[in-house]
Image (cartoon, rainbow, N blue to C red; front, side, top):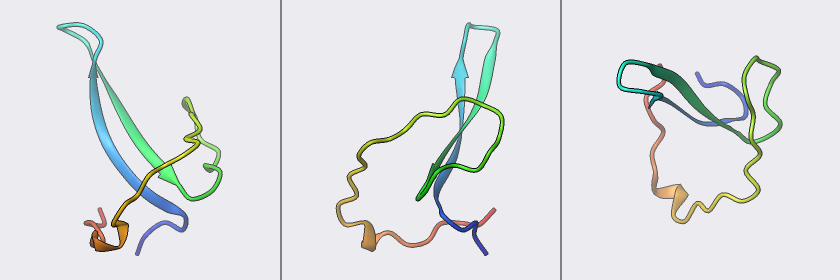
Length: 60
C-alpha cells in the first residue's frame, strides 16, 4: 500500500566535510507536498520517457 500522490522517494547522504555527513531525503509528489519541516523546491518540469515500462518499486 503506497502513499496517495507520492511518485518517488529516496534517501541520500551529503558530505558537509570529511567528518560530517548530512542525511537527506528526496520526495517527489504529484501535487503540493504535505506540511512537514524542511526545505522545499518546486520542480517545474520532469521528463519521464518510457515511464510506463518501469515497475512499481519496493514498498518499505
